[in-house]
Length: 282
Ligand code: MLT
Image (tube, rainbow, N blue to C red; front, side, top):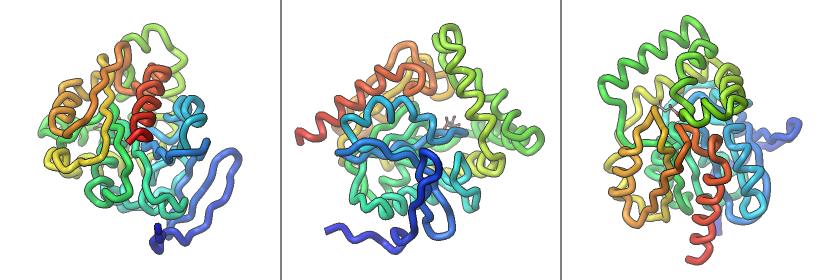
């Protein structure tokens, strides 16, 4: 029987339509909808749990969908240390608090970096993985240089400067041309991100370990999803993960950029729903 760790002893309360879990000395905000197989959605950078609104709306009829704010984002406390490993520890503490032995972890971009850290640290808590618009490798030298430039923007101009710098690359051309309301919603989300969390997230990504060697250790069912218009992470990264994770499935969504779950929500939800269906057959 599942015995929650000590981090599961905190309290949970409602704030408006969302929930807040007190986990040790920090609060983690989350939405929790539906029943059945537990699916924990982990947002990217610099997002918050509302990135997953289309998934909570579309998938809560077939699964228990939990979307949380990583520390430093959304309604969660801003508190160092910020690292992939600490973000993953927070997710384990949330699973403990919710008395969930295991969950399917769905991570987009930085959320994928966290999902792979969680797999390394607590594989017994992972029922399956959905790795969306992400990569396994650490930052290249060129990426580290860009990361430092983004840190300077965050420190000098705040989250709105980061939003302006990141937004064009974050959405695919199809979305930018045809769905300006998605662009506006993402701009609002990026601008609202607490600057401490943004700086913490950038430093955490800069320092993150290379997870390439982790891929061959993955033994749970894994779905890899990517957008064919992703300008931030090339689709080749998804193909490389697919080649390295035994038995994984790769799906490339046409007309979607880096935020494939928001840009083509019906297609994304269909893929996750099918994946969950295959899990229950096992
Ligand atoms: C994200 O969407 O989480 C970030 O773009 C990932 C990154 O910058 O490496």
